[in-house]
Length: 74
Image (cartoon, rainbow, N blue to C red; front, side, top):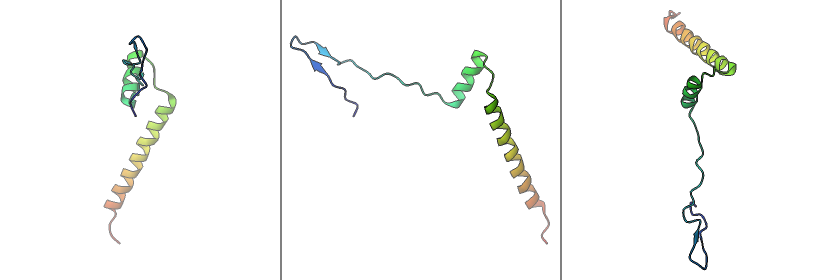
């Protein structure tokens, strides 16, 4: 339902005929990162910790896969 109520007065004035709802700004994480870089704001420590945990988990999974593939069959 995108229709908004319009009202026409007795004199012919159309109230609300050009109304548009306000724009809600939703930025992607990449856009937020670019904006922080342009404003000179350093990354939050929580974001850095999340990245470290992610990269360590990817490394551990890769090591397990390599170990299982290289392990001789018994």
